[in-house]
Amino acid sequence: MTLSGTVANGANSELGTVPVALRHWTIMLVYVYTAIGGVMLSYMLLRTRLVPRGFSVLGLIGYPVLLLAAVLDMLGVVDTVGGVGLIGLVPGGLFELLLPIWLIARGFNLTAMNRMRVARVSG
Image (cartoon, rainbow, N blue to C red; front, top):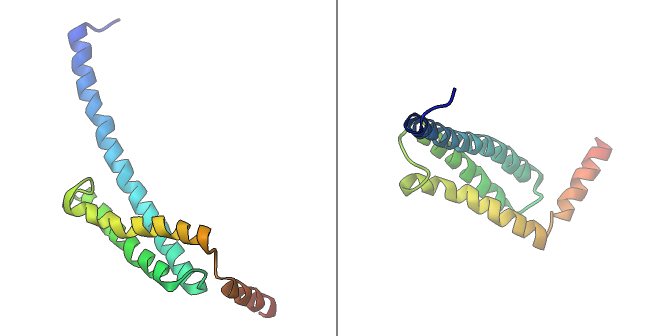
């Protein structure tokens, strides 16, 4: 059975709002998982001292802020697409921008890598 043109257009306009809402929730869940993984990565980089402490601290500040912004956006308090909520994305974004540049230009701290190797062999 086929739908008439007016019924099909009405159904398309109603169903079109569902993917838009799901897209927003999907992005917020990606932010939550990215924030959790970023905190773990930043903590490990801080403990191992493979990169300068400033990068690790930037990640340890930026990712909890990202997590807070994503949760507040899911609760409807702020909007991370624009305005004040967008500020919550900046520190984590800076970490994700600057860390690869540093690693390409300078690499990991080789003395810290050697210390980890010696500690693993002797321990």
